[in-house]
Image (cartoon, rainbow, N blue to C red; front, top):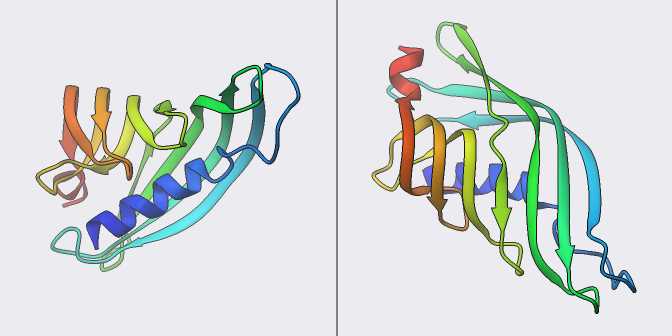
Length: 153
């Protein structure tokens, strides 16, 4: 379930990474799009939560001379409000961490602030520099990790 929730968040962020066709030139493809999504988080903590993510993202897909993707960058200004389903208590966090993708649109690196899982299964607000797997799980971290369940307790 944890991997599924993280995958939903990464899929939302990367939905426009794959270019729709050859650009005919080498300039990067740029897209801006709003984000407004509600994601349930059942069973992540000892209580259920719901996340409401809002903001704006800016995606840049870098291409070679033939228009083939060579990598990508996703950044913007996002805010997530976690709400405990049992008490209604809520906290809002900025999660504007930039994402870096390889030529296949696979997430490989993150910086800044994220709300995501670690390899040991903890759900965290992470600030720093991260090596990540394709669905956004932090594999290596240099920075600060704060357990979301403890913050929401």
